[in-house]
Image (cartoon, rainbow, N blue to C red):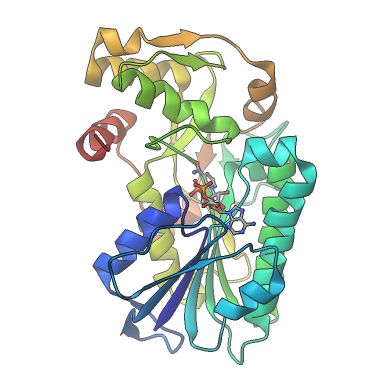
Length: 323
Ligand SMILES: NC(=O)c1ccc[n+]([C@@H]2O[C@H](COP(=O)([O-])OP(=O)(O)OC[C@H]3O[C@@H](n4cnc5c(N)ncnc54)[C@H](O)[C@@H]3O)[C@@H](O)[C@H]2O)c1
């Protein structure tokens, strides 16, 4: 079988690639477990050739319908749609956010629609689907109320996922991902980027600025758990998703102060002292609209994965972090 990952050069795309290669098999369009013969990484960022012969790198923009149609051919069984402009960038550059997050998603859906069958498509939505005055916890049936360009683009993606699935153009599966933490490497343009920065940088001996107050609640998930959930979403039978094709995962609710306390417990006082509290109204304006508490009964009942606690997330990061 052939599988496509859009955004395959990104943070989660790379981890998902390794996870799929190691696993070797997925449920195909007939619903049987099949070997993955080809894994296409579609991304505008050039990635180095992968040593695994099953990997095929395509460097192109998802905003170009022809390039997208070029990879979404009638050999594909599954698509993981991860390509996106992240929250901070979509807020700063409205046109880019609309072109990639909305236009690109539509290009992909239209390419899938032209196939003679409905491929499985895993879509990555976000906590940013919610904002403003909300019940606490946010429930599975809480209306989406985005308060950012990125959140609006993700919610439109969720609606399109429902509609293209209802029309049987695709078999869509959407996950609202919590903020993924701890993200290795350099900071990205996500408004929530500090959540990883205040752990990653102090561990590396670097001072990190925290732009929000210690009381700010974050809804978090570790990278390995997020990737396991993307794969799991692909593997569930279509009936599991019913008419509501998108669900909120079970993230951890942790205050930023408690995140730093967990850093102290796992890495010592010196590391925790490297977090400098300096509020940034631009970051707060986006992040403070996101809810921190969810009751994701649907994800739990369907068997999606969750993390044990934030200290375990840090310890896992310490074991796997690049040196
Ligand atoms: N990481 C998180 O905390 C988080 C939380 C919620 C949702 N998500 C969603 O999960 C997905 C993956 O996130 P990530 O953290 O890996 O992001 P990332 O920024 O690391 O990866 C996104 C990838 O999309 C690619 N891309 C951007 N514009 C493109 C275009 N025009 N054409 C082709 N490729 C393009 C980028 O080059 C990048 O490699 C995204 O859709 C994101 O919105 C992530």
